[in-house]
Image 1 (cartoon, chains in turn yellow, brown):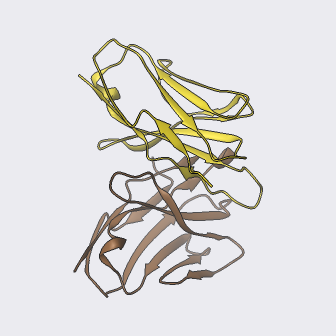
Image 2: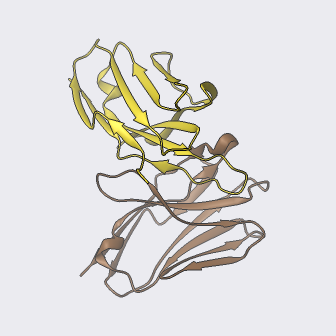
Length: 114
Length: 111
């Protein structure tokens, strides 16, 4: 069974640009979450989608947005990039059954903003 | 602030030794306690978890113990190996399985 796939794995952008990151969850998983990981702030929750609906959102500015498609694939977008947006962006998928709280993480998309 | 405190922040052991990482939580309603391992260049991976109706759970060299009275749970790794070197997290689990991570514990296992 294929794991969570994130693309691209690495990208470099300049301040003011925008970026779109993609996540394909494990087959059958309908919940997709996004996290940002930086050396200073650690792992922080961005948002969670289930059946194309955003159910939960972390404390990030409106420049960070996301969406989920009918096939459960998800994208996140960051507009007007700032230097501080340089981070590893991790996507995680879940079955969301009552018996498990396990999230399956991808290897991440490493964004560098110059 | 953090609802889960994790100690120590760094742990260095010799190969073959045991390692123990402890997490203290504040929410009495918590009923699910996972441990995630993040290796360099990879995303976190669930390695073991425990529910509040169980006091201990083992899986080969790793185990988790839960003390509900004291509100803490611990990760125990026996016979450590270099491949156990990683950052370990005990995130708080919120609505829709949203994870709130602390700063984690960096475990270094020297050959």
